[in-house]
Length: 511
Ligand code: ADP
Image (cartoon, rainbow, N blue to C red):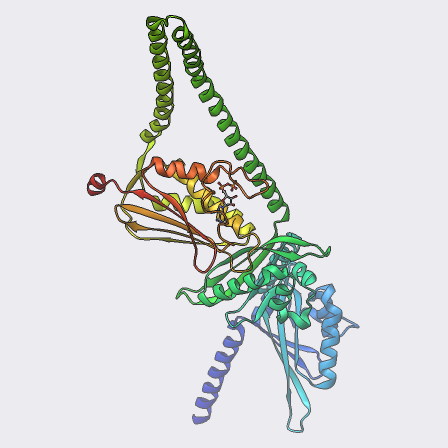
């Protein structure tokens, strides 16, 4: 009774184990010590559509028959060699291969087998486990394909790409960049030094300083500088890098890119030169036109004044003098002189009419606009522009276009004045409140003004290509707004041009 109960329990356990072996989502198989298959679990039988009995073929071992029937022809030789090696050495078996399903489709499997030994230490059997990894392999292949595609794309693009960790460890350098920097896997981490060595010596300090600042502050970097190209010439390059942050804002990686902008810079230079020439030419043309029309308008009454005074002189020098006729001629002189005055008054009124275009505009936006318009030129001349605008400047009425013209004139003069300066090239633009006015100061660090008494005269210039009209026009614009334009010596050196624009007290209160 007791025996039959324990036999029943044993059988129950055996059934449970057999069920487990069949239900486990893997293929389980067993081989003799010589590698003859003796058991496949149900999942394996279902998968293959074969059982042990089906692989018994005359004149062939069960294992060879199974390899022939179920292992992909491209994997069969490797599979057989690995197995033979394991049977001979007793080492565990682990490999990947494609296994044929009952419907003829091959799927990737990962298989492992271990030997078990009898009491004497001899191998008695092999147990194997095999998982279907087809989906995983296909996903890996797709990933590798897309990685290869991306790599080809990066290699084909005419840009340099790199990345590094917040700790400064270089994590990626595109092939093109490696070639240009003369880097290899061995000195990969020398990226920053190699990149900086190629920068033009005049730009190097600034690139280094700005890059270090951006990395410290976690800010994006963007700068144009000259870089030594593979042809031995320096070419304009735009370098950019910026951080990638995680959800908490911590920097995870820095990504950098640099691109050749030589052609773009050349085109911009040519365009800027053409614009400057055009602006100069149109200024000269409009000045000449204006002078001609003023001369024409005034010369008529002046000619009349001269002829009437000749006539009056003739009547007075007669014997006796003809006072009546001379008086008439003097009246005509007076009339002609008045009409000359009128012409001048009309011309002045013409200019004064520009007052109607004055609006209450925020001065800071005009200053920023002028700064932006000149930003390219400042970059080209390696000048940093610092703008300091006092908060809540009172609103003032001015002609936006004219004041912008003044700002651009003064900024351009400041930039040109620093052409032969050293590295300390800073142009400071400040706007602040003064008594009943807003005061704008433009300071450079050039050599200073050589002829302060003459620079506001029309056509006074010390530049080979200068026209000498910029300051004269600027002063007349500022004065027509009721302000003043003057120059002072800057501290420690250079020039500070200061102009004021008066605040309309009544309007300021309502604004
Ligand atoms: P242009 O720039 O065509 O010479 P401007 O009227 O603008 O005409 O300037 C007149 C002269 O004033 C310049 O030729 C130069 O000698 C002097 N000048 C103007 N701005 C500066 C400056 N920031 N620093 C030194 N000199 C200046």
